Length: 521
Image (cartoon, rainbow, N blue to C red; front, top):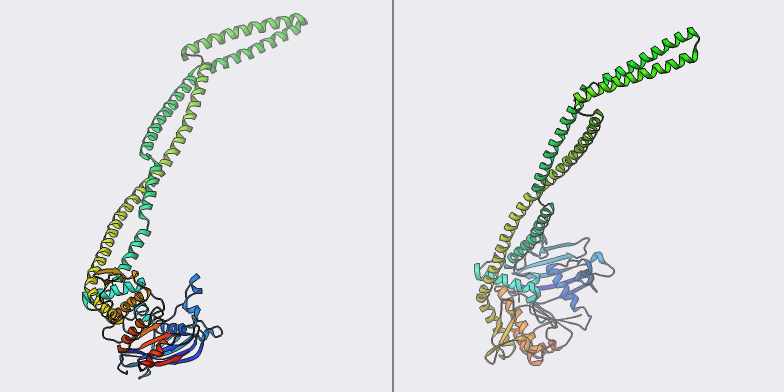
């Protein structure tokens, strides 16, 4: 079968899981890898997947159960490696990988020219473009008790359908388009513009009527400034009037009378000394002093009365009033200073309010823009999904025909009409009505999903014969089902690799004289 488009020729498990320098040869036809439980069949299957698409070490909790950790050699971690020889489109290649995370290395060689190439992106670039880890896992590989398909495969089939139905090329990527739009939507929602806008609105509300408060305070300041000016003017006038009175000159005149009396007494005392009449002289001096005081007080009161008449009021009352007005003036100045401080605070809050209003305007604009973007994204996703459904209706005809053909052969024509929707859910025509396959037996369901995988595989790789790997896939099959499936596989011009812990496959090959290659683990 040298004309096979794609088949695996040799596996070399240098250090992988339990194997050390284990070599496995395969043929382009039917291969049976036989071994009891825990003989290493799953390890060989994981090795094939790893050589085709690489093995990444998981992170966090999942790292305990990922393939990297599961098959990491116990004693030679740094030699976690292997090689695989295969043919694609008639050309031979050797793939070499070191899976160890610290010295990871992946490359392949053209076996004809010896040219070395580095593998980037996980998979060698000589593989069919449609062959991805998802398509391999869901078409070429059928594992034990695998009754279903995963979301990655569903999206891959939708993408392939869009490509084939719309352009006939592989330029259209429906899954990536939807994923990109959903990420963009998530990014817009994560900005929380509406929440920020609400917070700004709350801050504006808390600041309240700044303009009104400022206007009222400005009025109070103007009123108080007028009052202070009036008080300053009034106290100045009153003080000037008080200064113009003659109260001070009268006091000075009173002091002059006092010293004059002292001089008179001294003169009288000197005369009395001459006459040696002490007591009489002393008495006379007292009388003279009293008389002078009386005269002086009368003159003082008379002058004061004249002054009061000129000043208009009692000067002592006028001083008291001046003190009261001065106190009011000081209180007014203190209050005015306080109002100026309040005005400064309000002006700062007003500036903050202006900034918040500007921010609110910007957030409102951004919110409207994001709302339009979200609506556009929703419309785009809905349109893509609608088109994908329409495309599936066209692609689905081919898929339904191919799957129906396969299911008819492997069920002995018991089921001949299979319907598959855009999410790869299946219904089968039975007694003139479509019923969901979940109502069928597990053995029949297994046949349905096998037919689906093989049908999608043939549509994905229409011009290439790619390998099919079956891992204990017939455990639900009775003898009739098993015989029908094996008969169908025998007719396929492709490499088939059967992993089994039973000898049923081997017995079938021998009984029907079908060429096969046996690998015992």
